[in-house]
Image (cartoon, rainbow, N blue to C red; front, side, top):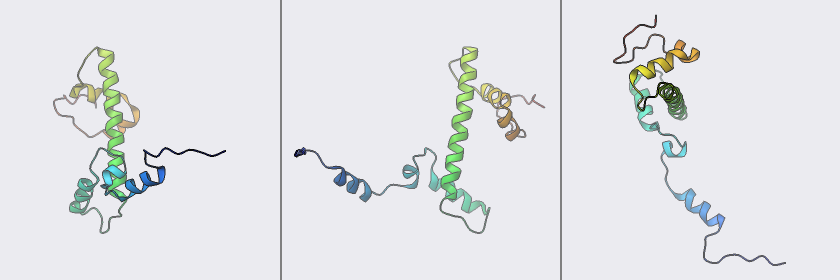
Length: 119
């Protein structure tokens, strides 16, 4: 049985070649929102280590993106519980301090516009 191919469209092989030849930045390749180049520059200028691997800023960007998404999700849940439509600094503070892991991580952090009453 002969298999018919469409003549109008491009094959999978041609599509892969076209995709492979494009130059993507590291942020797009890692499918991240936080800039890998910016974090690499901050790591280099901060002199945290003598040498820096190429994957370190990618990993750091992924961690920051994950933590941001988690905190915003918790704050959004808190806003829904209260019937609010906006995420305020107070809601961020409550979301962080109501979560056991985040509370320990952000123990010494002050969120702007929030009175420090969580000791």
